[in-house]
Image (cartoon, rainbow, N blue to C red; front, side):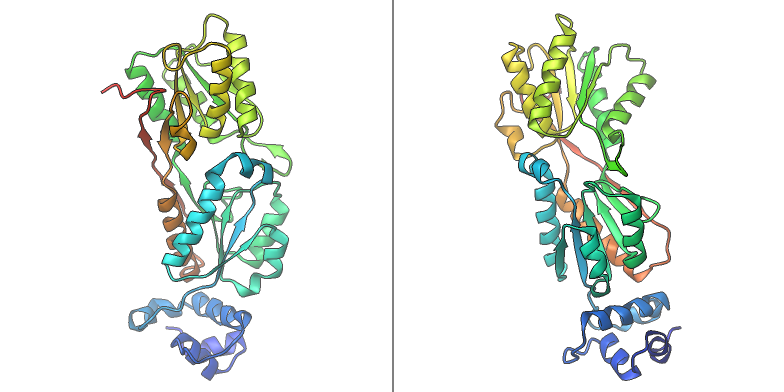
Length: 337
């Protein structure tokens, strides 16, 4: 059982200061650096395991939000900006305060003021930067995508299950020729990774023996790229257009639908479309998109809870949570039930 004296000796502060902080003395005035150093030592020594039951009011950690999203992508795709806002809202509900950082270097410089961080996006990051961040601020949770799962926890939508479910629904509805339109995944150390949705589509179509499952995958997740990929799909398919498409995001789908409209392809008469994200735009395009809803409130809440657990148990194994999606039917693929 860790004692106040042990924490004071290891942190370098007086027993009186440590005691006042750990007993949540509202009149105690100390710097964020001092506060976080004492809290870090208390966590390392397992103080809360034996004392949290007697704590009248928990001492809340200071956390940061690392928001690494490409500015151009953010303008066209509301998903990440909405996710950032949802995390900030859920942080407020939890009684916490959060400071937003757009650069890893600035977060590292301010690391002593925080006990942990939540990361959104991973635009132009390197393994070296992330390793330095882990050394300075090891308690980190990435939401939606995790660039280094060996170093940080994560909470992500279950996109693999989403693709599997979409394929099953299309096959049950009688569609045999099913195509996929998507963008490229994480760029880590300037090496382009495959997106999880593309990998899942390849794997499940192989397992299910689908012989006609063309993929049109290239570039970023934005409207312009969706338009170009839609044009390519029409041109390369000729009179043998897939009976249905799974599109990796609503933002891509907007561009795809524009390309289809220009080519005289009518959705869902000529081809059905199932999309992912269920963003606001999904209801207003023509045809309105059937899309899988990613519950950002759940992602945000679970990230906060997971981060608080990591701060309290810093030596535990890393945890990666998957949150299921749910389909919202609209005209691009009507409910077959």
